[in-house]
Image (cartoon, rainbow, N blue to C red; front, side, top):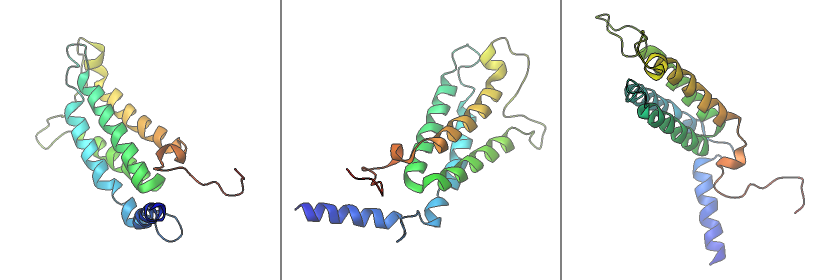
Length: 154
């Protein structure tokens, strides 16, 4: 029974990782569409509640970024998360520009509350900060099972 459990764990790990223990390039590319979706969804929701001084949309957008970053780092490693960071940042940057008719999706103006005025900058800065933090965290925090360290005796 125990050998069957360890055999299934080895098969699961070998599906997502190559023979050398590295994540396959196709798994890393999964970070691009996820980053695109996070950038679009986060941008659409980030201003909700900001005019009333209770930025629940910003909290929801940050939670989306944190969960997506955690999932991509667990699944695709650091390289996948780096691609996720690039895709989401470029998406938000493109959505912050003026549209063809001169309309703006992420306005910056003299709004009465702090969160309404600086929501754009808080969203852009927090997006990059959360993902950069997830890249810098140790790999053991994102592993499914215990990591085996080579060269150390237990």
